Length: 128
Length: 150
Image (cartoon, helix red, strand yellow):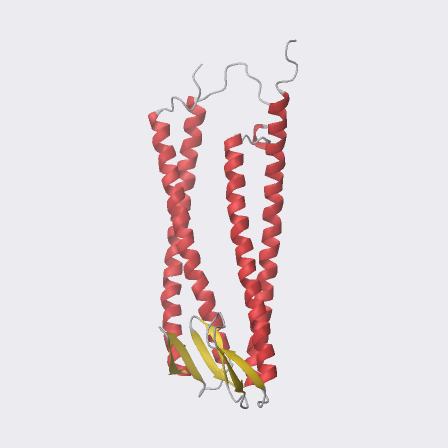
């Protein structure tokens, strides 16, 4: 008797490939989302620290091998703009993730149905 | 027992799961190591501010990381320090504020280490469970099918 893995019906194989592709897409998306959310957390932390400092505080930024001086207000403005941009991206990633998860669940359901259809247990076989 | 309560996984799947967990555990351990290094650096910075704050203290200064040349110097009174805010930003503050900021950062790092340690503990437990199952399978294979020749 041939093993199940040796002759997978094309219909099932196509769905399994689709499932793997969705899994990869989901993995990549989550990784990208994590990077964005990590930067957002960092920005929020910096903005929180800046809020406790006097308005005339000198802020320096490393640019190459130089420390360039900025005033507090311009740094807060730059970070707030970056934060807003990242928040939009984060929401977009969340929407995409939700959509991909729905697709994944749908394909997984199809795969399970096809497995049940093509690989029924032999008649009289007892379920443990 | 109902079908729902029974989950069947192949040995290959278990091995793959164990490898994934091993990889995850390594990543967590690296993160804990990095954060522990940060903690040591924060401690050193606080100590340096405390020692150099008053000025007039003799010190030796290495001109490079390997210490090929070391210069002799004397500290002046410490009026301002630059504290790292993150993302390549530094803020110029008085030493007292600098230490306060470092204390906050230290607390944050400690909390992160604790969170990672908890996650690490869970992952190691899961890995050990899978390893034990694989061990049992290996032993069963060595002993051969039971009741042979009956």
